[in-house]
Amino acid sequence: GENVEQHPSTLSVQEGDSAVIKCTYSDSASNYFPWYKQELGKGPQLIIDIRSNVGEKKDQRIAVTLNKTAKHFSLHITETQPEDSAVYFCAASSYNAGNMLTFGGGTRLMVKP
Amino acid sequence: DTGVSQNPRHKITKRGQNVTFRCDPISEHNRLYWYRQTLGQGPEFLTYFQNEAQLEKSRLLSDRFSAERPKGSFSTLEIQRTEQGDSAMYLCASRGGSEKLFFGSGTQLSVL
Image (tube, rainbow over all chains, first blue to last red; front, side):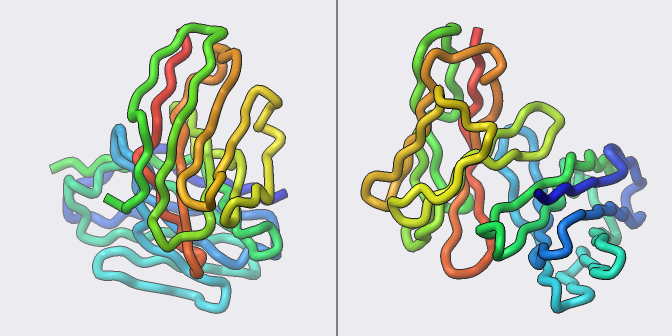
């Protein structure tokens, strides 16, 4: 089955700096890669996603890049703000696997004002 | 608020008791998923429904766990004879025609 590795597990940045979180996946059939933000006591919130036929996608301060050959994808957050502090999860799925998401272990992002 | 509703938000029970959680997905979504999340980990897939049919079950779902979606709308997840290792956040998610999966706020289970 799919295995998703995520790093770093914790990331501390100064407000205004950029943050980058990286994930690798194992199943070459995976074709959908979402990113979720989870705040304390809440469920994961979808913040951006990318499909395998696209190399990069941007939405305001967040962007995701995908390298299918290397089987890795990354989340980039620019101009970080204290409200970006949360746990971020990457995930991967394939149509063949019923689109069931396999999640990485999470990255705790702390943005210091 | 994603539109996926889960009840209760918190459940404390004694070991050996049965518990049942409810999930109301986004109304037009025909696919419903249950995941389990332990502290410091990513969510792990438990089971998946398309309409009322349960199409996939993880090996994590022991025979003490049962899930239903009788009319293809809300779903229930029951855990019988709870164990301390069942303590976790139980997340429900739904999706419609796209791949986008929307999660509820979860039910936090504590087994004493």
